[in-house]
Image (cartoon, rainbow, N blue to C red; front, side, top):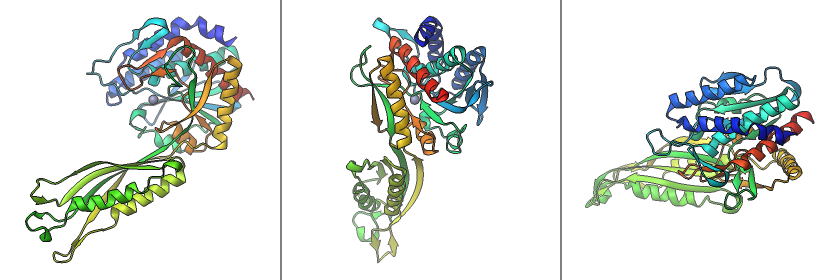
Length: 387
Ligand SMILES: [Zn+2]
């Protein structure tokens, strides 16, 4: 009953997808993002949903008549990584069901899927409590809505991320699709290390800030534990003004990733300790090396918990019923599902449109597969809210 309902709306679905892709919603193009939000909101309201603003510019789409004691939150965003003055701006229909365009997979296909899954449930079944949050700045780590996620969001029983599904091989009508059961967390520090500048002919009158940085780098890299999913990397270092000067100041950045929140906190603390300790001393001048440190990011992981796995199992069962080939995978990068998961809501991600080349000018999706995935999404939601 679901698939025929979805297939009948193929034209409307494609029209909305094209309309959304053609609106440039680069994160920094706030007027464009807001215009995309208005377009999506208008369609959602025509479908009978209500739309609320969250923390100013984000939108929450929900069924005001919803009842029942189970609530599902769909997680999505409006912004993309493609600037309005670039040359990747349009929706393009390719052969064999493929369409290419900025954000078509990440995440406008997912937005359309979420909205139509909500509508299918409402029209075919009941006013179930399914809500969709649309972040305005996810590609920057959702800085202005993170508190809403971490503070309990809508108190959902389950959260489903509409980030693209990851083909396990070349994207085709039959390729197995990955759904994301685990994402690592991400943290970063910015640092400035101060020594004492002097002429290179009299190094005993200075304190070399680059050497002080080197001391820290080797210790930070020694924290790498690949088998535990912990990685650290000093990715930027700027210092020195000439070969003939003892550098007095160095700036840099270090990032780290982790599979569990505990590992993340421990790694964060260890990196901070290494950065703020002193390693060099110039007795004659009475100086030691010193560091100023700023925590630039600390995003919780989407852990591979039993609760999250339960949701993955339900998706796999529903996929099997539909004859879809779906495999659970882990991803290195984060999404907003990291926040819902860390806030204690069982979460899964990668339930959106099957995509190739996201964040590049080759970004494309396979439309017939996306239509099938609306079915999987709606079937999964139905199972979660009606059980
Ligand atoms: Zn995305």
